[in-house]
Image 1: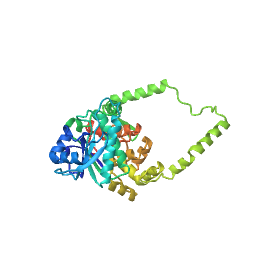
Image 2 (image 1 turned 90 degrees about the vertical axis):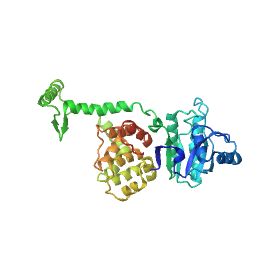
Image 3 (image 1 turned 135 degrees about the vertical axis):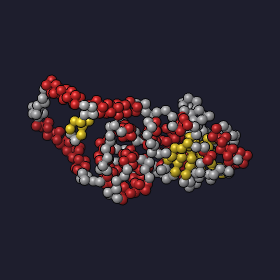
Image 4 (image 1 turned 60 degrees about the horizontal axis):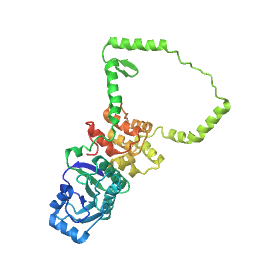
Length: 367
């Protein structure tokens, strides 16, 4: 997996590069900066910074040896102090991540560990800092291969802050609890037959209610007068044909596609690259290769769900794709409901989705 969020001491990370939240002048600050200097060798690192680097403005980065750390290099990102968000703080913070990743790429690093830059003593709001970190990392990973860790230290931050989508809880309550309540009070349908979860009195009550509704509401007519003229109808048909006929015919050609075939068709139809999809989905390249090269390969359901996010599918496309692997989106499964919410609202971000899984007590996908 190219991105992992872990709770650890960044000085203990066994990656080729670790990133430090540095000051603009050759001085040792607090928090992450202090810990890295202490672990690397305070006097050696400070002397190197003073002699070879000097002053560096906010938003810029520089690289030094790692000295006594297990890493090969330290990239120092001169982090912005947060005032009110109106003084270019976001642009500088994004530059810290972007330029650090580019510098790591230039020295051919295969792994790097970041702290949550600027969110400690520099005062940047943690939730917004996390959004920026994930955004910049995801952008980088669309065109590069690198194992990237986002290292958080305290327990509160390891849960990744407050909910990013406050309305998600009500969405779960509405679809998950309502479904459970319906099963409890009215039973469920099995193969088209009503199955009571309580007793025969409940079934009788439900039957009486249905009959009463039929008496109160008139039957819908099977035939209605068509008020549209033949010319208008013909125009509508021609409009449909010009807009949709070719797409519909193309879709019809894929009626018997397997999961693998249909996924590749959807990716191609959206003008995406395979790498773009599996990286966004945070699906291992080897797993995707199995799907691509074996038309009858059936991935695990969670992998299939992640690929729906990676390919930016809408809800109908997602249901269709899942069905080809023998899966369905259940309205009374919390994991399915969360994926459905993200897909319905076009939130194609696996990191933020993973946060919601964790906050609702479900197994995480990324870490």
